[in-house]
Amino acid sequence: MSKNSKLVARLQARPKDFTWDELTSVLKHFGYQEKTGSGARRKFINSITDHKLLFHKPHPENVLKRYVIDEVIAALIENGLITGEEIQK
Image (cartoon, rainbow, N blue to C red):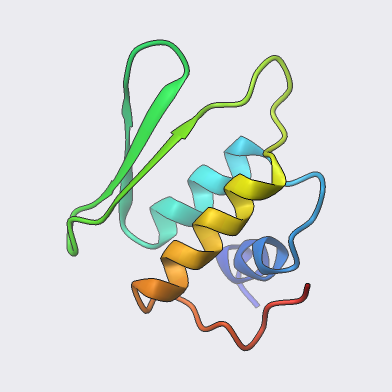
């Protein structure tokens, strides 16, 4: 199992300690590019599908909120990049 596959599986398990760096790695694996907005705003754009994800980078800690993880998983499923079968609630 590759590093990216392990990160995707970890994301789908919805851990409480999933970090921003892990999120950016997963999204880059699926073809998203990070664009910096003002302050903590970040936009991820998929160059193939033109799909956009908008988030605030967490601070001062690097750990994502649960709703962000849920949004990312839903978007990846909606765009056919992952399946919903592996998800643990």
